[in-house]
Amino acid sequence: MATGTHGRYLIEPPASPGPAPILVGFHGYGEGAGEQLDRMRGIPGADRWLIVSIQGLHRFYNRRANKVVASWMTRQDRGLAMADNLAYVASVLDVVHHEFPGAPRAVFAGFSQGVAMTFRAAAASPRPVDGVIVVGGDVPPELDVDAVGRVPEALICRGMRDELYASATFAQDVQRLHAANVRVQALEFDGGHEWTDDVLQAASRFLRERLP
Image 1 (cartoon, rainbow, N blue to C red):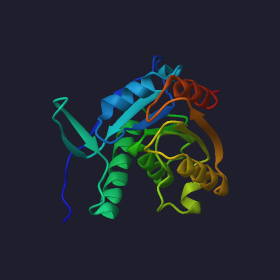
Image 2: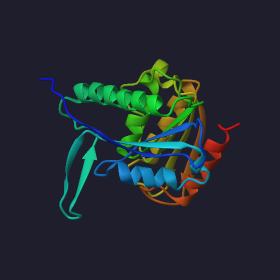
Image 3: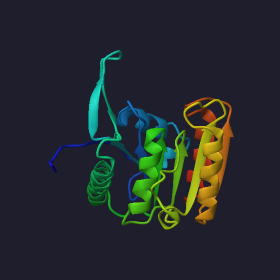
């Protein structure tokens, strides 16, 4: 049964006034919008962007840390959850574009479970998305070559000791992106399932290439 709920997102305005490009983030499982906001805020040069971090609709308690966290979906009613999430993201971005008009471009960025949401949201976006930055998660299997091809460019990253995102899956994802004519920057860095300084530097270059 369909029902209404409320979502949450965080915004970091750009350092300078006036229209700015938008950097939209999707956190990993068991995290919140704050964690992904901090990751994107740490990218050198990101202060020139309007940063938007969207929190998953499915909240729960991390009792060890005594904090509220979220996820994007489970395997139960997966297709319905994907549709809900895409409608939710579109609504958030409609509000952001209304409050901060004139954005010249947009990049989506995701970590872990948020990688699949990054690709889904970019592929379904009614507005152009200039590229994606993804770390520690795979391209969702339900996206066909046409959907994947709506992403013009991708920075896709994996830690060499990441046990949650296997090397073989990373290689398959790079191949899928190439097959969809996506321009790919592939980075395997010294680390595990994490967003490291190597990622920050690569993301900084990726964002800088999209500025005049």
